[in-house]
Image (cartoon, rainbow, N blue to C red):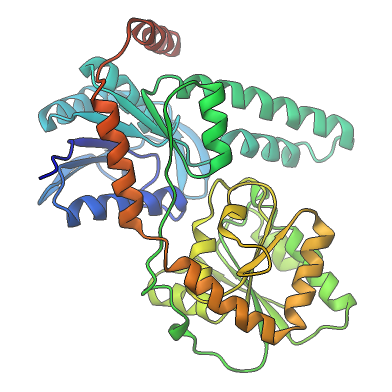
Length: 408
């Protein structure tokens, strides 16, 4: 009988609405279902410990001293005040390994505790933070001439990537959601790196939840309405359809963020639902006819799988992780440039029979994406790591130097 390690999972997002939070909740669900010892450390509105079956949850309250990352997320400069408590709970839990989700406030605690307890540290890559930095700098300095703006955003992206890769060298093993990032980490960080894809619940996201048959073609988008998601391109897509004489369509925009007001002012045929959950989200997906995802920064794209499970063909860009979820001309389209994206959308709106074929193929593809398979693979990687447990002398020196400089 297989013996599973005791895992302490420090996540930068759990209660929020994003891909990291969704994956974190599914990971905890898997451990609960399999009765595996699992400690989940996450931000909450109060600091306390919850225990239920094999699951222990350490909730840490964030202070007001920090800065906002999203409308529902912050980075807390005072998170280190929880170090002793988190170390004690992790030690009492007798963790064999600590897994963190990136260089966030809570995850920095997890990295430090792994070093203090002398247990292996696993780090998974969830967000292209360096690309987010570049996009946000570009938006912040929109008033500058384009060349200066591009130079500034490029500088920000390049230096952010250097800092992030330095942080990932603290890990004994790494996980990434797509093949390109696996290759990047293996080459630049020189650590064992494993593919950690995502799954989807094909009962929750299912074509049978469709409720609308009014003849309108619904073009859907689900996700944050922020600059790094390239959502202003949705207005260009609408103008392309209008220029082609199309009128019997509606954009369905599910989500919220800083770009919502701009989109409301520039989209004529659009419905903004805000953030949806549960049955409302299931129906929204199932009522879509085409799903468009113009982001160039996403590392995976859980929403792509959710749309596909709902029987919706997708159009994505050729940059980032979503392209690995699309079989070109079968369950959707991969657009290598903006005009191709527009042409693919026009083609799908003019070819209902093709949409029907792609709908079936999308559903079939999503039905092969199992969360259980994802996390079984993660535990396989843990086992390999624990066979060579402990930090090398060089790693100990590097980790000590990192935290000494951070605290100074």
